[in-house]
Length: 201
Ligand code: GLN
Image (cartoon, rainbow, N blue to C red; front, side, top):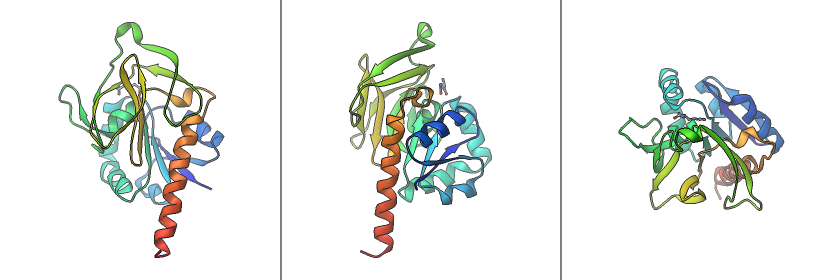
């Protein structure tokens, strides 16, 4: 089976573990960098990106997760996790992992929109996904290597760059685990490719 970790420094960890299990993966909470080596993929959850970023620096996760990505292992950032993945944060705040070629705007949906739900079309999913937005970021601009997967009211809310997946909303807060299944499939593909390469084919 495919084993996916959920970065457990702060934020919505248990809900992601449940959704990943529902999508057929083994899922574990990740608190130490040494755990990364046993994983096929990693979820960076929602929460507060400044706090998550600070704790990642403190516990050595910045370099370790950059290496994880360089090894070709998939990463899925949701809400604050999307901010953590971005190369650029609007307003001049320092990026955290700086892996995905996009500019994000934090808390981008205005005050009346502290939180809301909607049904979203997402490229690669065969039916609309129920999406919960909580003080959500949006993706303002993407580089040429980034595929836009979903747009809400003209704003990009989900995207993919090779083995990096990011969404503005909380896919773990509903019973629909379709986007988690999409990510587990990315991890399966990456793991299969790796074992082929290791056989020297
Ligand atoms: N507003 C949070 C941030 O900027 C993200 C919110 C969330 O993850 N639900 O980090």
